[in-house]
Image 1 (cartoon, helix red, strand yellow):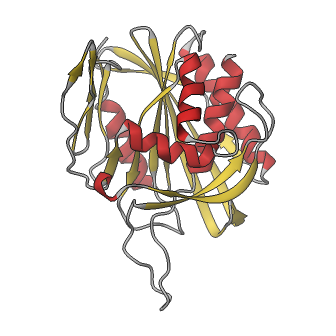
Image 2 (cartoon, helix red, strand yellow):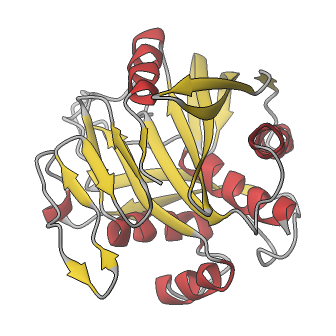
Length: 277
């Protein structure tokens, strides 16, 4: 079960790893990026999440509602029964229910859970007929995607940095954090190789943030040619994998970025994590 869930997540991560927010206009100049239209080079799975078959890459487009695009949006701290709605205040995300708080880099936009699920659906559309069907399947094993966050900075070779956050019960993802992140690296590596690029994978390591253990691992892949429907020249894609426990849940994060400056901003984000359970 654990390997199947990780394979599904890595398929979706790879689909969003080439997120595009800007396009060339008719005059050949690059327009101002906007997160209302995100192109994804999506490796489309051919089977249900119960398998780990190798996906194929196909480009798709994700449309995001205009009212979700402001970086200054705030989701109200509302309570329904014992469920407290996560609060999104600019670049800060806080959830008592999910048990963590994090501040993403300054130029990122955080999308709420409903919008994030619509983004994710574009990478999983071959498996499900609707977003509701996908959510129902995830609910069976307790998978949630609290948020997706995308940079609003101008794109670099048709790609923008992004962060994907997955939550899953510890009972569904047993084992050490190092084991989980190592399997994430292995699954991601297999999928990159399946579409013709060879990644470099680091080793998972535990770091202490605010007195709590967070598992971190790095990877990179060099691209010089066609990838996920886009032609890249002398381009390196970096990813950082994070994992930590919050109460009975495991939080797995994948951060995709494209240069050293963005990498430093992601490191600062890691230091902002506060585990509340």
